[in-house]
Amino acid sequence: MPARRPRILLLNASLAGETGNTAVLLAHARRLLGRRATVTSVTLASTPAGDADNTSDFASLRPQLAAADAFLFGTGTHWDSWSSVLQKFLEDATPAEGTALWLGKPAAVVVSEHSVGGKGVLSRLQGVLVTLGCTLPPMSGLVLSRAAVLATHHDPDAARDFWCADDLRVVCHNLVEAIAGTRRWKTWPVDREGFNDRWLKTPSP
Image (tube, rainbow, N blue to C red; front, side):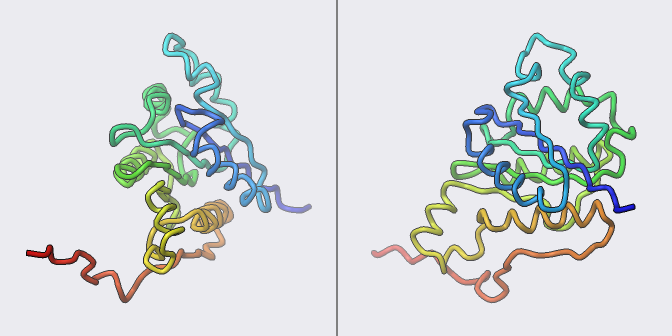
């Protein structure tokens, strides 16, 4: 019998729900992942998780979380942190820490930001997911900023070491590789020569 296609759950934790920049990133990821996996998605802002008075929201998502072989989380950046709906989701997930709901399942993270703060969000969220019990594949998180998009359009060569939308291919590929255990990892381009260049000019007297 053919091997079962892996099941990946996308969790859109953006405050803007289906209308925000994170939704665009996750839609792109869904197309990429759909080539090798069965992909389902949840938008927290449009589920009971978006209702601050609802205390059973995490319970309602448990079947989808349990059925998933891996996760891809997406959030915007709000004052150097993730969204309030994601914060509530993680708080509600606390009793499931270290259980089969998470244990050993690969997780990836995509963060959108206007200009700054997203890398801290990415690193902290990856730390939370590991604490819950997930594993992190190599190069399984990225931050896409408006500043990087503008820089890429203005000067592609100078922006070659910035995260870009194409790097999502690496994130998605490595997530599926982690599920399969085949470990044929990919990497995004890395600036190995100009990373130490001086790019600030001395002010004129």
